[in-house]
Image (cartoon, rainbow, N blue to C red; front, side):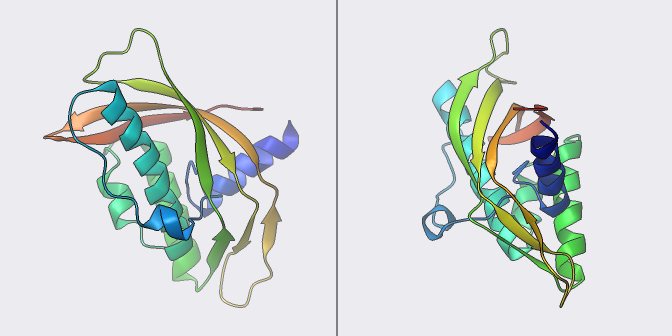
Amino acid sequence: MTSRLSLFLACLACVFGLAGCGSSASSNQAAPPPSDYTVSAAKSFTKYWVTTLNRATTSGNTQQLLSLSGPKCQVCTDFAKSLKQIYSAGGHVETKGWKVTNIIPIAGESLKHPGFQVVAQVSPQKVYRSKGAKPQSYDGGHQGMRMFLTRSGDQWQVEKIEIAQGT
């Protein structure tokens, strides 16, 4: 359980993407999901947000991640801030990122503000906190979280993320 908590804290330190969060070549090509009010569209957006987190993790560019994250999403802001610190210091993150393996709607949530129980497979990662720094290595594993979405105009945004402990 301690190693999973360490993994999560490491993920926060380097991101996410939430979500050790690198990207693969195919995930970099993902098109934005549809912006309609369906459970399917909300699930697609959730996967797209994780893909965007992965891209931000390996590039240091958090602009798109923040545009998909609501102003009250503290975890989203923390991911972006950690990445900015690493890349501003000349560091970088090496990982294949997070891959969503399961998304289950949370009962009782409205379609305008849906919530999902999300499980992701997190790849191992190496975090170089500054230029020339020795890497910190983190094992991969499964990470659970609850993601709550909202609408901003005609687009989805992540309103809140609750990270599961000890998954």
